[in-house]
Length: 218
Image (cartoon, rainbow, N blue to C red; front, top):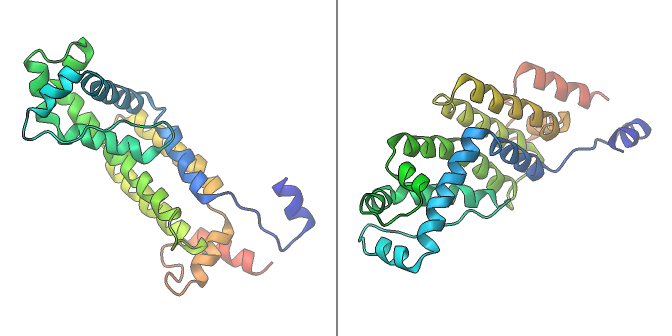
């Protein structure tokens, strides 16, 4: 449909919803096995504690305990909030497991495994830049020109934070970003960024500048 419209009307450029593009990125990334498993295991710990009045009471006996949050499907910020709530309460959860207040063997194993907690922090570091970008794009002060800035900031942070992951996992994440970038960014984003006095195209590379120039010359 887009192609037909653009072929018929030279001056019309069709672009996808930016917020949807960022949501596609995170929905793809959370399907990567290591990330999917960390989320599943962390959610299981939250569920075991919160779904049992007895365990929840034991949990709340600690002066350090703060609220454990559930992740809600497709509300991606809630995934990050759930993981952060678990890490904030790491010591409380660990002590529950050591004192036989958890029953699920997998939860006990993960709660007392330092490598699991490291992975939780790794996953937060990858997902948080995406949920921040989504919040920016869905905000009232977002313009077409700022989409590329939000994307590049997010991408740089993710690339910086994926170093603890395996080479295969890093490649998977990079592939997702490259694939979704084709949906997210259009020459009109680059041109808008160049024309916006707040940005003046300073964050664009040479190819992106040329893409903006070609669109301007149409």
